[in-house]
Amino acid sequence: MNMTIKNVTDYIEKIAPLHQAEDFDNVGLLIGNETTVVKGVLVTLDTLEETVDEAINKKCNLIVSFHPIIFSGLKKINGNSYVEKVVLKAIQNNIAIYATHTALDNSNVGVSAKMCEVLGLKNYNILVPKEDENIGMGMIGDLPEPMEEDNFLEFTKKTFKTNGIRFSSKIGKSLKKVAVLGGSGSFAISNAIQKKADVYISADFKYHDFFKAEGKILLIDVGHYESEQFTKNLLVEYLTKKFTSFAIILSEKSTNPIYYL
Image 1 (spheres, rainbow, N blue to C red):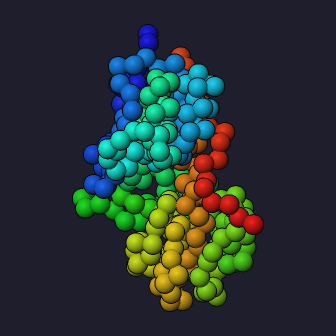
Image 2: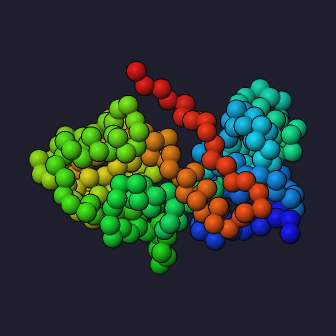
């Protein structure tokens, strides 16, 4: 039996329903027709021109991306920006693009849950829950054993495969309770402190955000891409359980636009 794009996206929406995305977001099937038969799926964090090329080379006609390539409206598609170039190339090659973004961010088995998994946290639950729902942003849980700050900083750097992390002043005690949030998470610093987290791992902290630690919590900025990098593994693992008649491929390309020296 042929599987259509709708079959694939309906399955994704079991763990990341589109209605739970943030209002500002642009999620769902951004390019393509849901009745198209799927030949192969490429899973990526971002959709760039090289991502579309990879899909073409690997005979995938559906890209499942975390970040949406079309975020605000396009009035022209002339290939004058990287967004327009991606959209043009995808349309010309009959490649559909689907994005999950904050629908998966708000999932209790989504982006932040995967961060907990790679860190080995136990008993984790939602850091910033939405009202009356078992969904929301971030997670908070416990390390199996307390760790000294220096050891935990090294562990975090290694776990998130980064050449550098930024962190606030050390709090001078061993760490047990860990809060995490994939992507830009400065808005939840107060939530992490309120819930008595010893450490909060996220990304895109500005200069003044680090002052908010006030000696109560260790803030660690691992980088935006780094905090979300395991999301594509999550999606591949999930899709592979269901679909066997076509390939589910993890993109080999790093789409991180930031380089370190």
